[in-house]
Amino acid sequence: MTGRVGVMKDLVTAGAAVSLRGLRKAFGEVQAVGDVDLLIAPGEVVALLGPNGAGKTTMMEMLLGLTTPDAGQVALFGRVPARAVAEGLVGAMLQAGGFLREMTPREIVKVIAAQYPRPLKVGDALDRAGVSAFAKRRYGDLSGGQQQRVRFAAALVCDPDLLVLDEPTVAMDVRGRQEFWTAMREFTGSGRTVVFATHYLAEAQDFADRVVLMRQGAIVADGSVSQVCAAIDTRTIMARAAGEHSFALLPGVSAVKRRGDVVELHCSDSDAALRALLAEVPSACDISVTPMSLEDAFAVLTAEEKVS
Image (cartoon, rainbow, N blue to C red; front, side):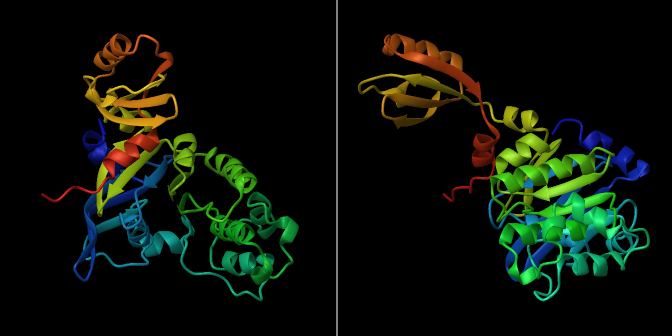
């Protein structure tokens, strides 16, 4: 959004946490990621959003050096991904892959810690990830949410400056997600950088400093939640209005939803729509006008383009 292009050179000079330049990756005829430029400053918490197939996971794999781009450059703190990972600057929690089912979480995290020059104490990583209570059980006997916590501990144990998370709270219940984000807030309180992909838009809205929306391998929006929502000049009018009325014909109304007597009007011009609504339906009540939510903006910005 505003100001991103102007600071690109300064971020590179200062040592961006993440620098992606002209990144491209295709699988056969499918362009998974196309000419992506993205800079993330140290200390930013960035949510990567998009529908399935938007290119989020592929971009994360290239960012971590797990997939080789067809074109473009990746730098993490001014280093190639392999070097940044080897130095313990980067921790990752990905959907793909897993651990040996016979190992305990403590054994898993201990093995991971041994790969890095300055890891956390294993017990500290287990505590921060909420794993200590089941650290001696077999990994294969754990629930999906508990296994996610073990992956989180494994990502944390290198004491990274950058944490990359792909759908980190999948399989967690509500309490588990709350505890996870509490731990993440503690982690980022010391100025760490986080990049996470999620389908839970509320997580992005509550936790991220910045959201990056992708569609068909391209970035279609980049900025704070308020900036992304403001980019779509639409507001929503909610009202209680009994009876049948031609709401779709009101000026400024682009879409209508009905749930019993409650009508939801998506408006390109909410002022004109509200005036027309009150003139058309004087009995309308319980009226509210709200800006577009992140969920609404996501639906509009990531919608598939129609082919004429």
